[in-house]
Image 1: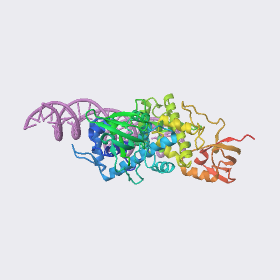
Image 2: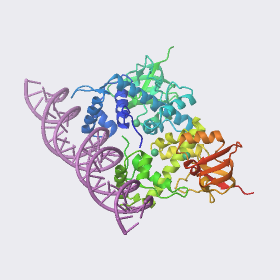
Image 3: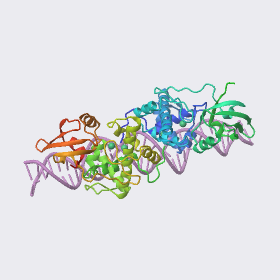
Image 4: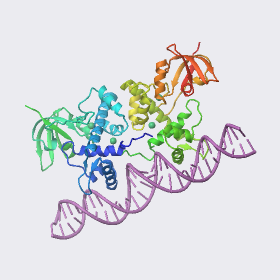
Amino acid sequence: MSKPAKSDLSSTAEDYVKAIWSAREWGGEPTSITALAERFGTTRATVSETIKRLTARGLVTHEPYKEIALTPTGELEALLMVRRHRLLETFLVTTLGYGWDEVHDEAESLEHAASTRMIDRIDDVLGHPDHDPHGDPIPSRDGVIRHPASAVSLAEAAPGDYCIVRISDSDSDRLVYFDEQGLLPRSPINVQSQDDRAGTTTVVTAHGNLVALAGDATRAIMLVPTPH
Amino acid sequence: MSKPAKSDLSSTAEDYVKAIWSAREWGGEPTSITALAERFGTTRATVSETIKRLTARGLVTHEPYKEIALTPTGELEALLMVRRHRLLETFLVTTLGYGWDEVHDEAESLEHAASTRMIDRIDDVLGHPDHDPHGDPIPSRDGVIRHPASAVSLAEAAPGDYCIVRISDSDSDRLVYFDEQGLLPRSPINVQSQDDRAGTTTVVTAHGNLVALAGDATRAIMLVPTPH
DNA sequence: CTCAAGAGTTAGCATCGGCTAACATTTGAG
DNA sequence: CTCAAATGTTAGCCGATGCTAACTCTTGAG
Ligand SMILES: [Mn+2]
Ligand SMILES: [Mn+2]
Ligand SMILES: [Mn+2]
Ligand SMILES: [Mn+2]
């Protein structure tokens, strides 16, 4: 029913460029066909075809069996989608009383439907927030984004005092657990030890809880060192 | 990217059932293939095919060249979409400072993306409003809607004093004009005369303006008589 | 170094929602 | 009552997004 102009992207295309961009956001590796298929719950065949179309449209660079990357155009589109997603998440929390664990899925679909006018009004009403409820920075209207320079993931942090800057919103159950433990953006956290053999990281949370985390949970949390 | 369950409708299907329902809302005739094609800016062929699919899905009843109507299932879906649309419009006006002439298009796309949870939260935040910014009643969660019993369109109103209950939001320029003239839901209005030969209706608005209206403009406004 | 598992691609198919062109039916002006 | 215009349908096409099955390429364990 809507009339996508020649240059307008489908929601599928928008989700793909966003996913490709997001894979690298906090120092990650480029994504892969298989990873995208898992992310979207589709088959490798479908992803391969879709990537081919996005390449033809000038949003993505990809040669068979090689790395998937964004063109400058694709990157700008991705950043604008990230902006929409994060502003919508923030809006849902502050205006409609959503919990930080409930906003991701809702924003995932609203981001394709809200007009640019609506996104900008939300930005105004919220007073131009710097980051979303998970601590992720919000790109400006023209696609500029700034990450804390010294951020490290909990998985690779040396023992010491840190401030949590960001927690991945991809798993909502995990967010509930983190919340219970006092693991929130801007909260202080003390890294006790990394046990490489067990693959666990032991931390003291803002609640004073001693917690051992492993795997994705440690990769979901980004820290900056507390100056002492 | 979303996973529409077996029974989930596409946005196209949602817009169709809503349009079929809306045609009859204020005493109108059943819609037609041609009218739907105009409404959506598509061709008759496309509408004919789509109606065939909706019939196969059990949302619509239609035999070739006959009347287009909704099944009970289709009608419930339509009412739930109308609810979403009108609650979203109301929300955009009260929370994001949209004008009543700006909300329709935005709601037209958000209605397909917002979750039921979000619609219900909006309903709560707004305090369960009875009608939208255009005076259209808002169906309940289970699809019940109530229209003023004695409503007549301005096109067929006898001279006398009335209260405007509803103004069609389908033409946003017209809404701006009505606003300027003092023609708003809940405003008093005095119908002076109907000139059948000229096809015009002359009214005195809440601003005291003497205004002559014709055609769609007179069909867009619904009135209830003021008890004297 | 080899070769099988894993990753990626291709072929062939389906559905949805678009289109144009041609055809069929209905209806109302005369 | 007639017939042309208006209305609706069908046929045949397309692109986007999905699928399965079968194939190819890459890579790492041994
Ligand atoms: Mn999305
Ligand atoms: Mn987030
Ligand atoms: Mn719509
Ligand atoms: Mn409305």
